Length: 491
Image (cartoon, rainbow, N blue to C red; front, side):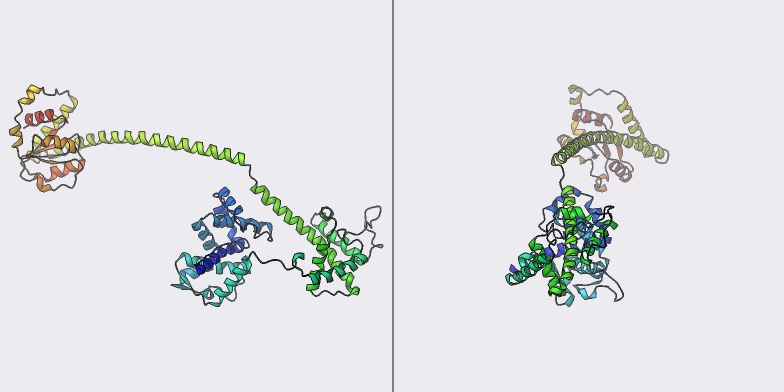
């Protein structure tokens, strides 16, 4: 279980690692936007709720933005959408998976020695190959050097416990003591150091710089200020936001200078001071940039909840109304279509039967009788036919009818059951049983066709497979007494 948990933890980190590669790979942006824009609220919320949300805050604004978008897509559970993004972005990895059989080896990634690929894109291809291999059910060669090296890189980059050793809190006590001694000497030699590394006002009355009164190190400070003006920025407000450089900040900068091999001899303090001037101004600019990014992401995430709820309520109401109207429309439409189809079926059945009989009238003498019966049926449909009285019904010879060698096609199950009570010797074939055995029609004296409940297919199958001498009769009633009356009347 511990091994499985470790594996799952690695797979989880691997997914987030892909986000850091995607955000630095510009060809991925259009694919990320395509998915993200389909449901911004959902993906944005999932991203903000993830513990890795601030993992890319050290990157450029555009990269951090796309990291958060990709993170939202992954954490939302949209697997297919995520696979789509990495397949389209990392085509070399996708090609490796397609060309590999059962085992995938990262050292076979189709990259030529002449290819110039940015590091993040290369790492992204490795990560994508591992993810897609699992998706396709293929095994990875875990002994492959590239695989083991990549695993270590993922664990190292994604380890949240790794701290920046350059921070003041991570400097040991002995080193701090040495750094404070150097700080004290610097502050004594350069009194303006803690004041944001700003020099005294050395400008002429016309606003120009009095270059004759400043030394080389003051010149560095002013020259750096003018560099910001090239980009239309003013460094002074950035320094005024935090005018005094803290002791901890100075110690951190001095520590960096030492780690880079800078000399601590007093004769070299001017160089150290020049570095601190530049580093402090750069630090303030980066702090401002980080604040700007923080405000940007805060603003796009700070959606008015009341307006969002109102919008969702309106959408829900409209959706429900639409659903109710569609259900009502579909129900009415279905009922009308069913009724219409039933009427059309009856009309088509009668018209086609009539046409079929007319075509065969002169070529087949036996059809003449069928046509006469069909015309009688059409007449009965258009004229009122009185239902026989009970006294008339008692005059129907049931025994005579039951002795007929007859088959009846069509009719519902309930109607057939009712007819079998008086005509048990007859063969009945229910409506819709289009694949009935045509042997049931052989040697029959009569075929009775129920026109109220029947199908086109059943009728034509009966007509085409009946014996030449078999007579066709039509039943256009449901009431059993009336049916018996019509049968006897039409014999």
